[in-house]
Image 1 (cartoon, rainbow, N blue to C red):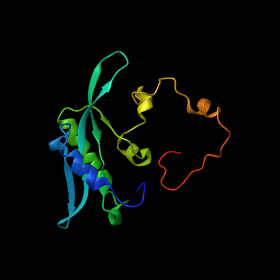
Image 2: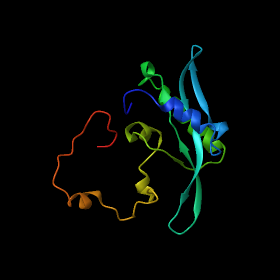
Image 3: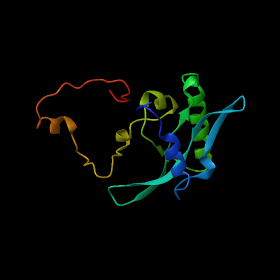
Length: 147
C-alpha cells in the first residue's frame, strides 16, 4: 500500500520471534480455505512525563488480500482482534496507519490523548520550524495517509 513490493511478510516473521509478541492475539482470516487476511499485536509501554509506565499494545501490520480490499474483511478482522484484546484486559492499542480506515473502529489521533513519540518535545511545531527554510509547496501524493 505504501511502496512497491511487499515487506510485511518478513516483518511478521521477525515479530513472531520477539518476546513482546502476543501469541493469543495472532489472527488470520480464511475464505473458502484460502488465507485472505491477518493481524498481530505486540506488548509495549507508554512512558508518561511523570515517570509512570503504562502497558499497552501495538497492532499490525494488518493486511487483507488485495483483491478483497474494500469489502469489509479488514474491518471484520480488526474489530474481532480488538474485541479479543479487550477480553484479555488490554485497554489501549497504538498503531500507525490510515485514520480514514481505523477511525471507523473507534481510533483517534494519539495527540488528542497527549501521546507523542518519546523524543518529540511536547510543544513541537512543524510549521514554525519550517519557517527556517525556503518555502516549498506541500503536495498531496498517492499513497500518503495524512492530509
